[in-house]
Picture 1: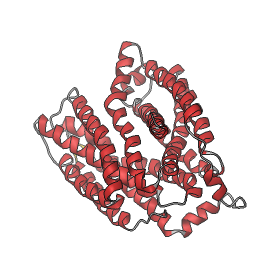
Picture 2: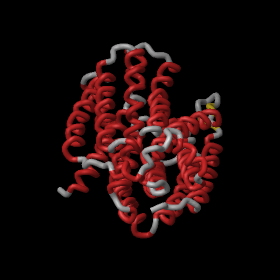
Picture 3: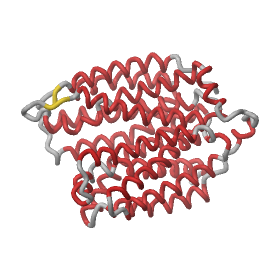
Picture 4: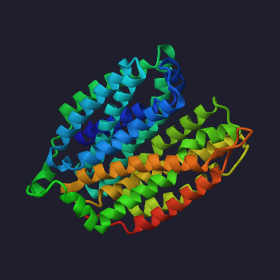
Amino acid sequence: MSKEKILLFLLAAIQFTHIVDFMIVMPLGPQLMRLLEMNPQQFALMVSSYTFSAGVVGFMFAFVADRFDRKKVLLFSYICFTVGTFSCGFANSYEFLLAARILTGAFGGVMNALVYSIIADAFPFERRAGAMGVVMASFSFASAVGVPLGLFLASIADWHLPFHALGLAGVVITAGIYFYIPTLHAHIGKSNKNERIFDFLLNIGRTPNLLKALLFMFLMVMGQFVVIPFISPYMVSNMGVSEKELTYVYLLGGTATFFTSPWIGRLSDKYGKPKVFTILALLSVIPLFIVTNVQTTPLWIVLVVSVLFFVFISGRTVPGMTMITSAVEPQHRASFMSINSAVQQFSSAGASMIGGMIVMTDASGKMINYQYAGYLAIVATLLCIVVGRRLKAVE
């Protein structure tokens, strides 16, 4: 196996464990609430604590991110992430688990920025989207395989076992980072060593292209997370999908994107990132409209529409993230990607809250006003296309 393939495999494995660690808590909710005596408000706080911690620490990390070798920072962050994951597996109270989730989320957010920075540093612009697509396929694999496997482990033991398994996987991946990820410090020599710690923030404010990149990220997230948290309950309450059948929705959607994400990355490298992003963003409007407007629907139609939703929504992110990483100079890339990661985390939390204010439940238990969340997502997507067409690659 070539060094590039080993690097991509390790980065994908890092993202896989990070995403599964974040996602697994939600389906484990019934067990956690019962065994740790949580009320709904406490459970919501525990879930959101991961995202907010990632956003806050990601922002703080931006001040020092480009002053160190990428490998060393990634190794330290992943070790701390693994410790946090093991801590979740040993938690025996709500307070202990909440603290462990905050720790894990903090370093999960840092790793997210580092992974994108390493891809941008290690792969030239003309091959970067292909590499991005391979790593981002880990998101799909986490949804289609990681979460169901975690739930299976919880069913044969208890909710602690998925975290122990993730922690053990983290130990193996940590060894892989140490032995196989190359030293990446070329960006340090390009930076101004006398630059003040807040100068990069001032630089963002003075650079229209970087402001456009952050706005692009915000709109891309808003164009999906105002809808995504409510897809499952809407399918059950309004579209006639049973809770058991939801498994097929995520299994087929995740499996499809596992194969399409690398393919979309190669297309982006061949035909241009902005062009492929524009096409996929326009195509994503179709399932966004359908999934937020239809009522009782045959299962096969639900599965077709949900697969299209997964493919186009995740697919547009591949060239989109490549465009963002290419909008900043290498010597400031990790700092900027940390700011971008914080924007991503806070935007997803904000979009979910906006969606929660729009969507309501009527007396019969059906969800109403979901179509308005869909319209907002469509408008954000169209604005994202406009901003993306004005985003420039600096390489």
